[in-house]
Image 1 (spheres, rainbow, N blue to C red):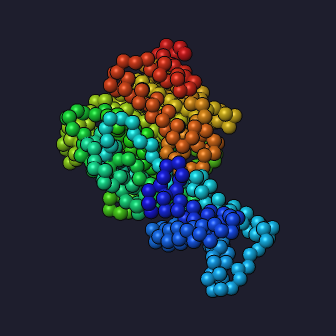
Image 2 (image 1 turned 90 degrees about the vertical axis):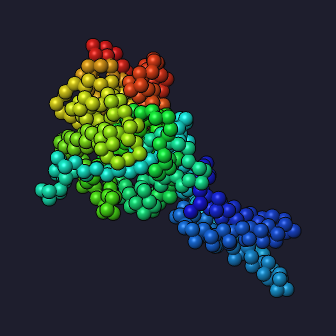
Length: 484
């Protein structure tokens, strides 16, 4: 499949098929002198393009275009063939041809509409001065049993993807596959994510074709500097790559981002030996039961985050082989997450003081003990509506007020729950699903606010954080004396 053209949501090959099909429909209504030439050119564009598209792979969004073209093509070519054979070309009257032309045009138009609604995601270009590299690690904690299986010898394993500042790769370098190390892994994960949310897999079949801006195994940026680390936990059933656009933006500004897959929680985790671990977490729909389940899930995730921070320290010291030895500053570490991952990040920060800052991306706090935070905290939330869980904001406010240092809660107008991950890049732009900030504006806001927070809390860059954050939405500031 060829590269998707940003804005069109179609590849050049798909666009040629669309152009040929539309031209065939239009040709019927051109003056008689122009009609044969236009029909021949349209057919010459359409037929080879459709054949090549069939070889490289047809997305379901193109099926209406091909169907409309298949219907109109015989009617368009028949007069030309009859004329070459010396027979009089029969031509329907305009009022007879109009319904068919309208029907074919509508069928063909359904293709680009579907491609716009369910596109192959095109990732925004990172704005920092670094190129971005990525690699995948798999680590097993010998001290922690895997509670999701019955095997008493099974130990907890996590898969981690790192995005880091890298040297610029040649223009010919293959950019990293989205959702996996290979297209097969990406398709496995995409199908599992679709099942997890109850969508037919074919609707998002363009997602495994996507490539981000990072390059697998790219050399680390020169200069010898050490980079702050930012750990990320995805949403319920989410995967390590679900915030790739955000991770690449942070890495381009000199951070190392570690996104976690949580086996038996993430929709699908493909292990190094090729095995796929599918999710076993299911929401019951009962608030009380889900609250108890959420506490358990967040506890496991928080332990995963602490374990990965330990492993990153070992990687920096050279105890684990890798190119980032001596380049990771785990003394400047933030823990972040989306949805339940955000709640897990808050819990991890409470119990592990090695984390110097915490960011909650629209996540419900699950820790029932009301323990205090001791790190700067930033909570980004979606726009509050009558459908928002009435316990969410009061519970989050209580957590932030218990902090012994200043915390911030920023409500972003136009944001929905999925605004805080890559969903707007490939899901229909329905405000109730992905918010009303467009395909990339939400990603820009999330990256800009979290970068400002990290630059001040981890790099101690002087700035008025409250002033920066308040430019993006409704800001509440919670000082240790609980004033606002």
